[in-house]
Image (cartoon, rainbow, N blue to C red; front, side, top):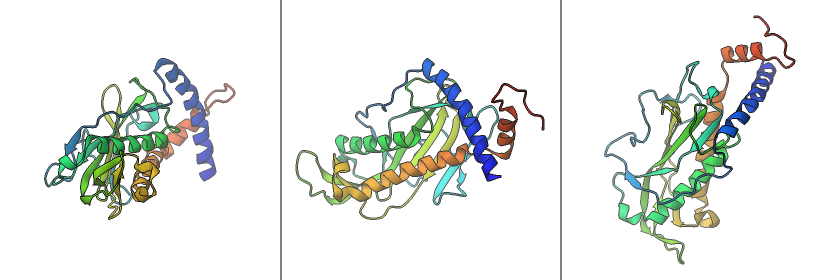
Length: 260
């Protein structure tokens, strides 16, 4: 059964690649993500479970696969993740913790966080969905926010032009993500990931990606991006009915569909 499943997915993938080529001709395609500019810093509402970033939260349920993660995957023949062939990656948004002193999270610090994570998630999804810049009927829009960003209780201790006066603590940060229809805005998949990283996940430099001292922070971002990809892979797994229909309509030599 597993072998048939993999073969069926490859058959369907071939059909999707052909369809995707047509989409790419009609959209402004780029191999690079949008440049991350100045990032507005928002704040988590007091005593709130969620930031308010997602278009809706009411359909989220505990993931049976991912720990500390709530997920939603739209189950609808007309509108589900299998219908889409490309994605727009929106700039990452930043929400500070409720009690954070936002004056100690300068623009260049939050911009560095957003830019690193956006690069991570773009690479994570790009081989599943071609990255495009223009909305369309077969295009998703990926929206992502880092929530609960805080400041370190002590000065960063870093020196040089790239140093931040205060370290940015992401030890209790979570991620809220959704993919919506780029034309209608309808939510297709969503996830809220609240992994507690603990102490050590601190950023003290704009160029933290190059400094070994901030390895814990890099690993956190990289890990979230990998979990995002794992979630999308699980969301795209075909149901038994999807497999049956894909297999029945596959016609490699132009023959008629097989009856079941």
